[in-house]
Length: 201
Length: 201
DNA sequence: GAATTTCGATACGATTGAGTTTCGCAACGC
DNA sequence: GCGTTGCGAAACTCAATCGTATCGAAATTC
Image 1 (cartoon, each protein chain N blue to C red):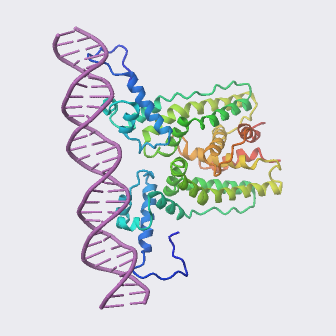
Image 2: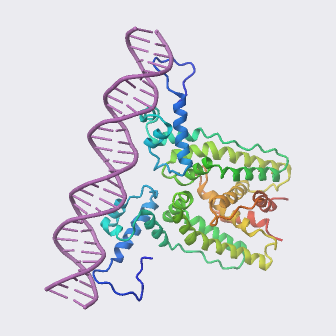
Image 3: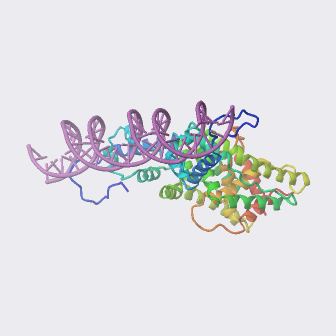
């Protein structure tokens, strides 16, 4: 979006600073990661934190939402590679990665935004789903599908519901708990075993 | 909190208007239900909408968070009574009620707040969990426990994880979908059947 | 009826942030 | 070197909202 077209005509004048752009996006992401909601996020604060002038921001984005959308696009959270040796191993790896991510402040807080502010900032939520949710979901879906194909799971398994149960259970524990108790160390295994139990032939 | 002590001395002067108090709380809840976040919620807007003066608000609550906490306390969402005839029936009834609630704007938006702004407004989230989450959770837990006791479910069922899988799966569908597709009409049944399958003896 | 308190309304100063403009300097093509 | 564009910094106007104060009217106790 902000990247220069390769074959474009070189415009005269000083080129835009890549560094400034990166600093702006980083500052915005950091503030979100610290718990600042999109609504409280002020351009002035972002500029101050990034060490740039407000002009430099307004020259690139016409409003806050566009900036945050671009910031989201810079999120390149690693997606776990699932080995495919067994459905159980894959699912456990997937759930563990999911659990780990909730400790990462950026991912966690941005997940909050996607969850809660999706009605107020629909573009933003859509972008987040596209970048973060969908690819992960595909990884999990294909792991389950492999199990169905290999006969490790029953052929009539309701894949969509199984995915929801697995991911939802982990989300429930990491985001919806009413106490601050430590999560059990083998949480991923327990979730996987409980749900997969019903899916085997 | 705001209610008069029964045996208290009658103070002289004009008594506080119950109607105004209700109007204020209603206005706040409505705005939240419309998608206004706690941060954007302004006392002035609440006063205007409730048709009261700002003084009337400040006389009762010293800040926004206290107001919203009290507003939450007024949430008396009905908790489904589970008949106890079978675990499957109970779980389906519970999940259906959960699904229904996400269509209710108040419940849905307040759930958003509890989910997302819990780090910024911890009191508020705690209150929400106390009023909404915990009672429901107990209802579901006892339904599952009944199943374990009656032998309908295995004795070694991991009740906490089972609850998370059931609630989490429904939450996943109602709040985390990446498309606007209609939810299947028999969603509650499908979730219940998939998960309970693994829990039977 | 007098004292007291709340009511809604309005005005007030202070603060915050948006978005624009101006400034002097830096970086680039020609 | 010259024109052009981007840079950070600062000043500016404009609007929203905060929390407080003040007003006359209304409601209630004594």
